[in-house]
Image (cartoon, rainbow, N blue to C red; front, side, top):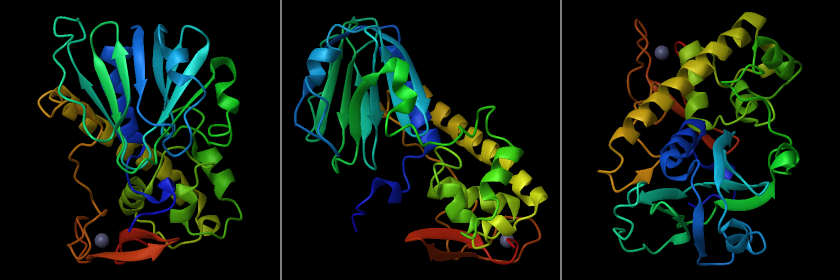
Length: 293
Ligand SMILES: [Zn+2]
């Protein structure tokens, strides 16, 4: 079934977006966009006015990530915001040094936006379901853009801490699973990594967030960082050979503790439980009801 809201899909989450961004960096960062081909008027929303005109000739000063958004800061003072939605993919072809500027595979059916770099690289944004989005915003005020203004702290940054999480959970009656998916509380977490974090910390996904002890809330902070960093590392190893995979960035093989393992034996040592699947707020939750309390 096709969800109506991209936030209901399980991919991509922060580590996948980080991997895409790192994969784009060699071809885009410090490089100049020669031209942009836009093959349709919109994705999830209409593209910004004259997008290709505003991007052509611009140098990409740097790429960065905020939550699940990639931002390309341009020399002219605007930033290109890219959201991969639920099926958006970026494919890089050509050689960044320009020797093989014309050595690109034929375009594919859902290649909606093509970035042609002066260095000869070509980046295709492919999105069959069109839940992705692009926008152009003023770099100086990017953080106040409607999509970014209400996003909470980056889980791998210094502003995310035991204190901020305890404060955010205070008096919350919603289940801890739902609270961790709330982008205002912590940025970039989605269904997969929240299931993993809760399994790692032994916290039941159904427990009300506000009822957890400070110690248990505190245990979530390093677990979140550990799970995300491991996934980013797995994404990094997939980048090493991404050329052999057709230059497609961002979706990599990764093994999970609980997510997608319904009926399988719990991996926690000494636990005889099996992974159960329940539905919370319309999303599948995978957990062990023996060791997650
Ligand atoms: Zn268990």
